[in-house]
Amino acid sequence: QVQLVESGGGLVQPGGSLRLSCAASGSIFSINAMGWYRQAPGKQRELVARITSGVYTNYADSVKGRFTISRDNAKNMVYLQMNSLKPEDTALYYCNVAAVTTGRSINSYWGQGTQVTVSS
Image (cartoon, rainbow, N blue to C red; front, side, top):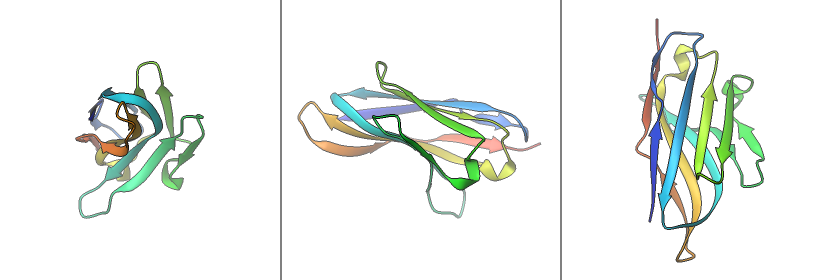
């Protein structure tokens, strides 16, 4: 199994910045894509940013130019640098990883979520 632990959420004023981190651990053989999703109250979960093993990235239109996703393959970690935060960025942010386990199974794994609140 693969476990994901997110950190870095919190309360920030509009225009501020936060950096989310997600650490993957467990029976990992390799990690393919890593990403961040978010879900605001009453809304569906949506993709925020995604990065492949080849470091190709894609972003939701609403965060382009403000958020940056990166990964550290040696540490099995993915990061989300969030700048110029807006109240509409308020949501529970989830880390998602597509991993191949040591048993050679391929699955998608989710973290427990970290809350980001943007408010004055």
